[in-house]
Length: 171
Image 1 (cartoon, rainbow, N blue to C red):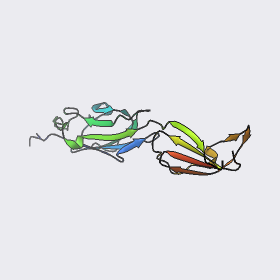
Image 2: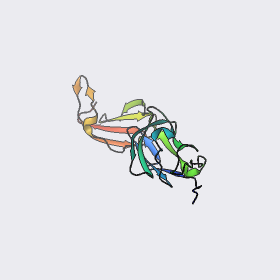
Image 3: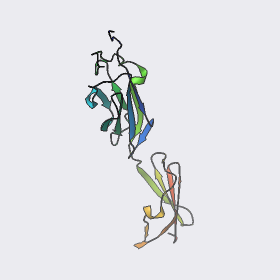
């Protein structure tokens, strides 16, 4: 029996998009066992791979961490002729759609734009340059000083690109 079947690879991710502080777990599944598939066979842009692990000779995993302060997609792929099966056949599936994972990345932190008070002076409204992904925050995440004295924040409401702080004392 002459093995002429070329091995293939499929790459998958546990997520499709990443924000600051998030990572993706990637799985590399080979159609046949390989003893020479290694992390350097993987092409990565828009971030880095770490925690390379071989669960078996056909299943590998790694962690993708996106570049900081970036909106450049993370792209992970394996080109043709990077690894072989036991018969020496090299993979020839570099252009297959399941051989590339593209992750949407936004690790650019929102920028503070402005602050204003409501008309009765009991709230401060903070505005940022983009919609905030969080909808909750602890009152202790914020500190407000009025005329040199601490003014405790009693409630936080986040909606869209604004954060509304309710204060103990009027401003």
